[in-house]
Length: 432
Image (cartoon, rainbow, N blue to C red; front, side):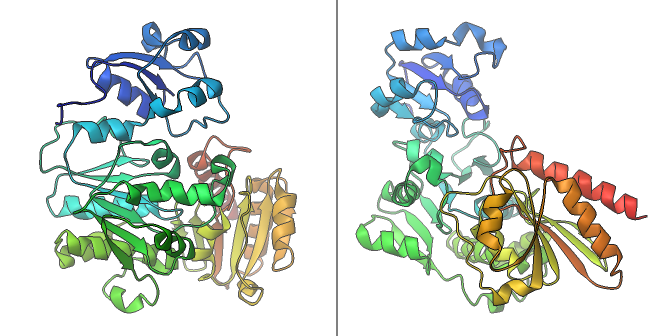
């Protein structure tokens, strides 16, 4: 553990946001500094009440450091003016983690595929007897891990929000899987979003390694504009079928997941992982909940739950490989998101749209696809199963990939995914 000249020791610190990362930051720092807490929801975590400040109390104190949770938008929160005034004092839990540990880390970012890539890489390291810890946007908060040794290696999933707020964090291995337009509401422009992702490479020093998608337009453009100290590997993600002849896992039929694997194979080679054992890990991988998750796979029916999809780009990797599919869309459309599949390739599926924003989706999709619009998911599934039951000898695929944020009707994509699974169970039982 690094202690010498640590900027987080003996300071007056405000932690803003009392979710998992905020609470773990408090527990990690409470005996090392004078730590105070604030959350927009003043009723949150009453057990820590003696340290939770009111809005007025925060304004009166002069803090050395402010630790902010990634989910907080400094342009649209209760402490917005205070944060803008103290912008140079803002750090994240990843900054704290980096300031205390010398361990090797592999940090994975990108618009799509972060969680899957991070989880497989972590599984591969664990299966080969490495002390791997999965932290960040997936797994445990960065500061909650225990019993860390010099040999511990961290696999970190980092969102654009985490990277944007981080000030001193860096990683020996950096991965940018892909970049497409996303989170523009938060970052204000595509340029800002790309810059947030590239902070991961910009922070690296000599002796570091970066892996980026070779034929990604936004990545290629950004690489030409700046110089980086890390050795950069451009990962080929097209024409990958020959590489994967020993991979039999159905989860990797989509182009997106094949791209994830291309990065894993490249990084695994650098880490000197045993390839035979790696293939076994990949073939055992069952996927993550609500991320292209096959929840039913029968003779005449396959159901895929991809509730995690919040944009057309994340959906297309699977959609373009499906035949006779019922594609279910809904939620809050992303600003500037475009549906880039040609009309000819759209003949293999029908679209069913639900929710309060269905008119926006309808306007985007109606010229390329057969579209039906419904108020809710229940009505969609009734319609789909009526059609399926009338064509019993045909193979059908239900693809729940909303391509929009979940916050119009659900807490998060997990809540939406769980709700869909329950509806499918009821529909299957009703068929009997």
